[in-house]
Each structure stands twice: as C-alpha cells, then as structure tokens.
Image 1 (cartoon, one colour):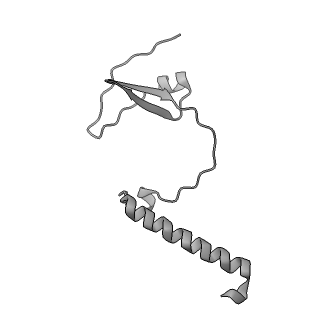
Image 2: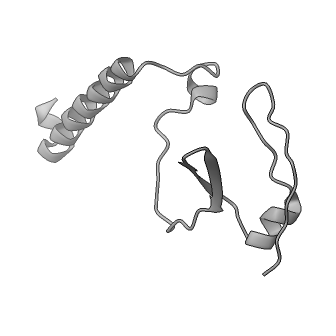
Image 3: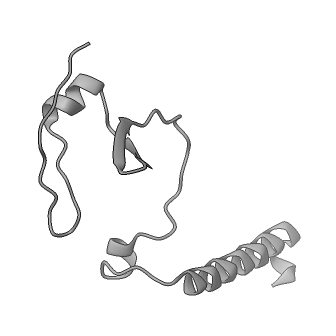
Length: 97
C-alpha cells in the first residue's frame, strides 16, 4: 500500500488543500472528517447518490451570509403552509379560489 505524507498549512480561515495526487490516489470527491483524541482523520466519503433539493444557499439567497436557525424554521414553516394551501386549491379545482 502506497503511503503519501506531506505537511499542509492551515489558512487563517481554517482551510487546507488536499493535493490532487491524494484525491486521485483515493478517488475522493467528498471527504469525511473525524476527530479521534488529538488526531484529525480525513477519509474519502462513500455516499449513495440521492436526490436533493437545495432550499437555501447562503451565497445565492442571502449575500453569502448564513441565517439563524429560528429564522430558517419560520421560513420553512411559511413554505409548508403555502404548499398546503396550493395543494388544497389544486385538488379542489378553480371554484375553491
């Protein structure tokens, strides 16, 4: 088994770069990061393909800023109510409007 080792700097934002040779060697497109005591383990994440829908993207929807969880919950609750109202109108036909 081939071992690749290299000292990597951590940026002021806490980011690291995984060299392309490592990513190619492992076939990693996504990673899983785990702490074990004082060690940080980075391993390729083997994810099953699932269908996902992005409902909030901080860059797209909020000028790159996150939002607090309570505000996100309120937004989601509003969307659920709108969806329920829309479903009710569509199942009852135009006379329900």
